[in-house]
Amino acid sequence: MKAEKKLWALRTYSPERENLEAAIGCFIQALNRYPEKSLLRTSILLELSNDLVHLNKKSEAACYFEQALETVVDNTMRIMCLRNLLNLQIDCEKYVIALETANKLCDGKFNLPEDLLAEVQVSRILLTLLAKPTDENKPASLNQLFNDLMNDNDSDTIPFNTDLRLKLQSIVVSHGLGDAESLVSVTSDTKHLLTSQQVEMLQKIITEQRLEQLSLK
Image (spheres, rainbow, N blue to C red):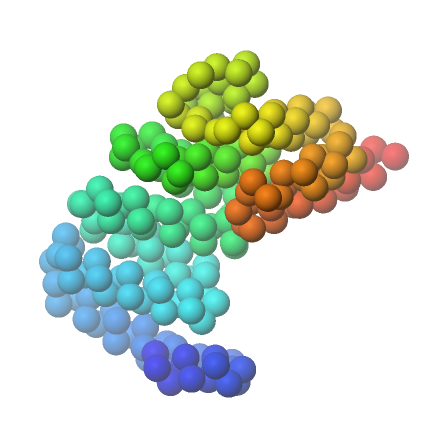
């Protein structure tokens, strides 16, 4: 893996991935030495995942984070793994799967810190607009999230300040109306309240809205 990282740093890539495949093979060989629920097995999977992220192999990294989750018992570590997995899935534009992961974070009774809960809930809203799940496929908590947001209900599950709440309401309404220009306007006013990843999702929503408008002309 060190050799592959060195090539990456030099912006020199091997199309055959010899070093990378050899490194992954070593990790897999090491995995087989330990029981499924072993902390060492989890540690190996997380190290491999993080190395792949460093090499910008995010889709592959997500696969190993998923495997690591199967071995994790500690709630704090599960939260960390789910959050990392969520971010990777969003980066890979796997919005349907990312929404499922975000739902697991919020429905897993993890007692998330308020700032993390707010971040994940914002992402759930944006992911829902991107993934467009049917009502039948939405978990109750997701329906409740939108209900509380749009009706200004006080809830511990949406720890948004007033400004963010109003901006999210505008985003949902503009999206529902298919009003791309309003989305552009509210995005400009909302960027400072979002993570860079959430801003990218919002830009993706705008692009999709514009394409839909063009297809109707």
